[in-house]
Image (tube, rainbow, N blue to C red; front, side, top):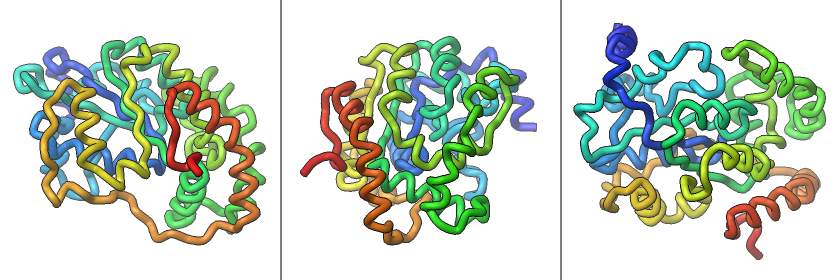
Length: 279
């Protein structure tokens, strides 16, 4: 009923002011809900703060797996224009960065949106991604090393099928078993930069966000055209946290060697360093 009402009034609902495009297991959920503590950042419709905890959402997966639902359905998730004066609203999917069509779709449909991205050490991100799948009984392979060895075969042909398929085609392997590939940040970000100008991007390091949420959120506020605002202590919450587990040194070393050229490319692309590459 609520979604139907939103769709019936979609013409009165402008799209997002910003998109939080990832990365998966990179801190995007924590960043989104921390940003909602800013008095000028609005939640999606209906207000996520009023929903039961299990229904909290920061996004609707429109530009990745829900594109077949149409523009009216998408706009139904945003507040009406009459309530948005002096405020901003955005949505996010951690799969947007990696999905091969999301950037093109967003560039066509919401070309004025600003793009937020929070990136984490790709080794830690990959291991966290695998552990999440295991916790949810969604990964059958009992070791991270086995999952990494299977990844190339699991992903074979999936990008081509996504591009050739129907707008709502969803590849579980591409979204959820791409443990190593999703941390190859530079080519994924470059795809987004083909559809949005460089000045429309704000890229944070997850490690710096968690170390100093206030400074990170002040940076985002200025990027969104807002005045920085102090965060209440209750805002500093790590969402989707999981206990750390040891990663085998040989696996860590192999991943470090794999990611080294991608990290160098990312830093050249953005003209900045990241905590996981610093001595």
